Image (cartoon, rainbow, N blue to C red; front, side, top):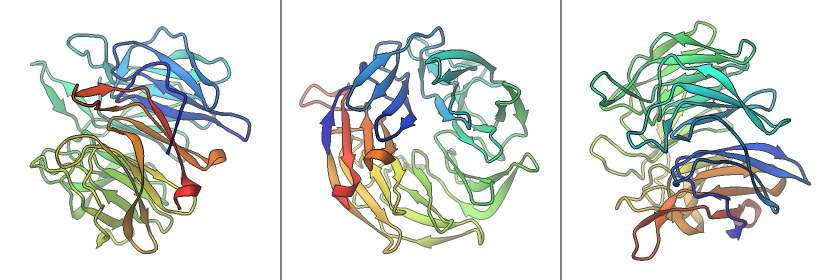
Length: 350
């Protein structure tokens, strides 16, 4: 793990979207995050950051989705500069060509802690998250919406079968979307079927966890790792889910239980998991790899600082993972929001 140029601003619960990945240029768009400032930046590996001008909201716990044309859809979140943390319905588009932002309409339901995923036809599924009810209380929502880049607008979908937040959505080989966890009680997984625009419960797949990771493997199965259960316990448990048979199979335990970590699929089919909260609810520095051939985890490296609420971006031209921001302990002063950037060389760790 190598320390490289810092971000221009401290960030946590931000988004990082790969914009360019060539032999001569690797650039990542960073948006939002709690750090006491309202900023966005274009980070170029080896060249540092350029702060970007914008007139949109200051966001935290939002989503950013790369579209087929190379632009980025930024949706929802909370206003990180408001004392009452206003929940946002607004959305924006970032254009790499102009390095500018433009309004992209409004969600039907303001939300944060939701998930967004690009579908095969180029539309974006936005699901779940937290909303503010009429009593100004935070509640999970089952609502879902679709963004169509061709129309530049959102449309309402039927609700999911269960309210969810801090869940995962995974695009499967058949084009459907697997939705896992994020509930306040044991609830089955469900699938979104784009052709029918509906959500379908997968029977006998109760899965009670949140802040986990879910990664599609080369054989079509989904690795579900870590997270927090209904009792608030951080989990080292991992399982494989086969969408075709709707069945689980055992796989190795992670070496360290973690939640709020990142999971990055690598070209050889393995999965790198970085940071997150451990069983003691303190940030972790460890990085472990899941080997799908042997179905086991092994620790391969440590970040220079423990962190959670960070981002991890695999950069093919560098064969490395760029880990940025987050928060973690700083000696005896307690948690701090960071702007540190580490680059994990995947080749050196294999």
